[in-house]
Length: 492
Image (cartoon, rainbow, N blue to C red; front, side):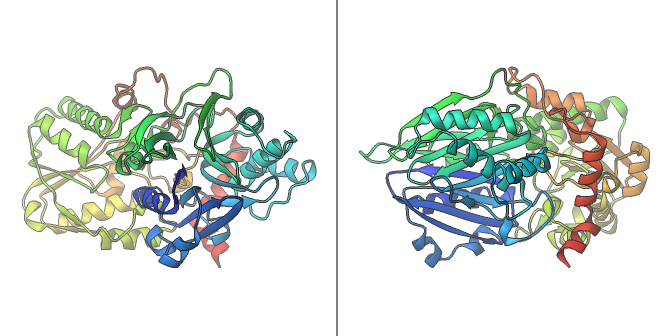
């Protein structure tokens, strides 16, 4: 879950990339970076921190060039290291940099081949560096000093054959152009568009979410299809080509639950409308389970649950109100690396408005429940504020399994729903009643927006991994890497 952007323009691109990264900040708060190309000169600035803190005027002045890529990082392996910030760069051939969103599931296998057979040096344990070197090696095999779109697409096809997992990626080839592509399942989003630059011709942009293009005045052309590549050369000519046969479109459903901004449209599905449908489905389930419920008021946990909560309240015909004041200067607790930091941030982030809770039966609505500690704290806040009863609804089903495609969800032992019943979870978080969304209803909430998509990546809910290369040993190793204890030892 990172944010990526790439631009080819007739003017300086760094201001556009900076603005794009601020719009994508919700996708990664750990680090940010911009790489640009000025003729054949490469410029790079990356650092740990928020976009606004990484770039100063002096940095922006140095990022010259009419094409570039940007990245805001969410650390899927939990590690915080400037060397893992992106874009990453390799100088052979041409000079290539990468911005990557996702996770390669065969990283270790490919790393060994790269070093032993392809004779390429890896300086980090990042799967993004592996992806960069695979593409660079396949492009070098084309044996040309100035690759055309035909040779670039051939390198993309060869890259698809070597790697597995989720990848929404943009490469910048110095002096040549930028190329973006998605994995054969289209798990992570990527969209592209254009806008006229006076009389000089069109500018092109690729980005993780449509909101970036909308805000910066670009006209959306299309989502990059699964397995497809879009290449824009330095002259501003755009080419696209399917680089695999028989792709199976399977976007990550958690994008619609939590990851994406509500004003985004991903694979022709409105995130806002899908969340409205989630609220409607939850309301119907409540009416079915408790037609004589005693709920007085519906209160969302800001902000990604707001849309679902409002629609739920409207469907039930119950009062909706904002009962928590959010400190917008605290980041998204879901993507913070340590439990202690997450718990502290919840207390700093939300403050209840007491009179909205006092002597009322309150239904709190959140987008999902991951570890349960945040939910427990919020329920305690509601009781302290005077709530008579506290019910809790999740717009997503129980999260029982790890994500291997770019979301550092938690180890299975840290997931509150793993090997627990809903009654047990309700007791642990201190709710008087707990309502989860049904997986079938969640899928239908997203699918309704684009019936041509027949399936979604739902592994965190059902444990089914679509790349078919995930076994118990892989999950065990991932479990060891992702635990808070392991992260703490790594930093120390």
